Image (cartoon, rainbow, N blue to C red; front, side, top):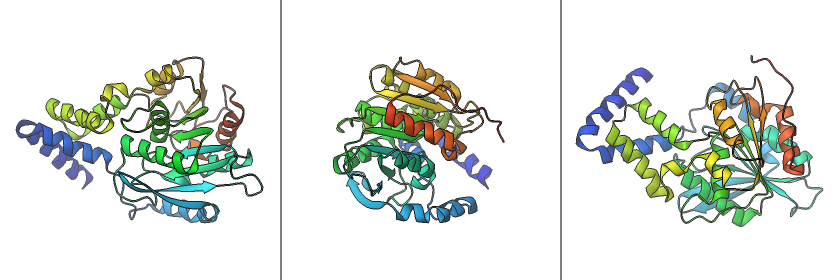
Length: 308
């Protein structure tokens, strides 16, 4: 059925390329931004959510609103420390939610941080079924206004790109969010590459692909070509840690290498054998991340692992 559906989608875009490519680009953008149905959860995900209930009950829940809609922030605090102490913002990736960041949140709490984690728009318990860079960066800005300021930010996958673009002030009309330190785990380097791969996957023609990319500029206020992390990091001075697994099958390790070349303020650490998602549950990675947020330095290696 999945193959049949994809054949229909590719046929549709093949036809619309010749009669209404601008409409095709807009439809493609909506598909690109569509988040999974929260009611369709795998058994593995159900078990993870069930195990995380006590953890999530320990957080204060804040429902916030931007012009894109409602989203939810969770505030985790060491109750024996000051609530106005240094705070770290934690951002999950695509097809994810706060519960997946638990190991990292707990490591940050152990280092004495207050932690604010978002269920990004269209994800977890947040409203809607749509997520894009502009709506996510606006959510970060709103969270900073209400629950910040933030000493550091930690983002996994797309969450790392969001944190970077929030710091860079890359979305028109959204003020930059200040972080002294930034951690990007398994994060992509070039958003243009993601859009090219997506267009190829659904069978977009040249004109429809151009319209898809133009839609990004309409919403974010800058051309898609400007959203390259290595270039953005080169223009910034924020101390940055890149943690990436060479065996990551979703985001190539080459992306991490490109970002690490942005300057001496960027450190790359290999997390061998941890793929794209297992990396989040690894205690050594979590300890490294929390230590970097606290001290601003990190070793360049983790214990060697063999991929499962």
